Image 1 (cartoon, rainbow, N blue to C red):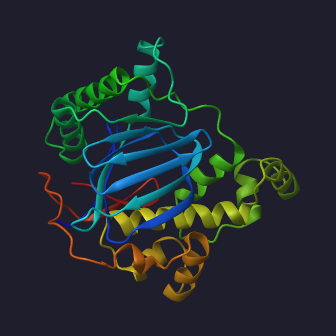
Image 2: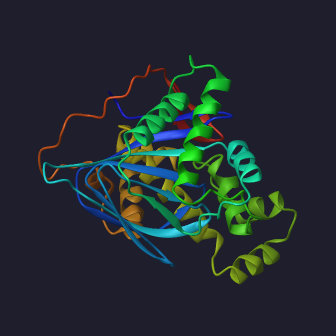
Length: 292
């Protein structure tokens, strides 16, 4: 079936990553804590605290609010594929409050025991997001069960800490990536002058233009990996008038062109099979996502 990004308010967000070349992604900002399950190939994740190698049948829980380097390596029979799942903030906060004795995940927590029961819980949680015929209370229960499994492996996601100005700007512009954001508009949204905006971002070691570009490129990467939207449409969705300009900026950011994500270098296996229904795309929080 065609890849999609799914969102279900009060439950979570999920998608499948499909990649057909071995590529490295530098300084990817992880805004929300996420669980990634590798189905085919190998994921190498590096952050300030170290490195983990996650093989097919294993998972990794990655804490939000940090930048990581990721390499997705192809399986011997071709292709890389994985599921990613973000739990609703309310569920994460409730779980953390109920389990204060569990250590918060710092950086990342590997889940390398290939437990059939964990896999079943994961598939149930994925379907809880993707199938709205599942009652909301049952869907949230399935997500809570997955958080329990993560806890049994030694950690829990932390409630969102106080956001930096840079993170707040990412959230703001993410509502409408195609908009031509100006410094005056962004500063006004946070009730400050442009000079104060520049100074505060400088204190965080960044600039508004860098945040705008990285937010656009990061979301474009998600669309390239998890949907089949044409590159021309993705360029428009993230605020570029021409595909050539988008491709050039994407290559500047990641070191390869957008088409490299999807261009196969060898034969790949059949698509991931998960029960789901399809409806047209819609904008959620300003970003083009997909619902069932």
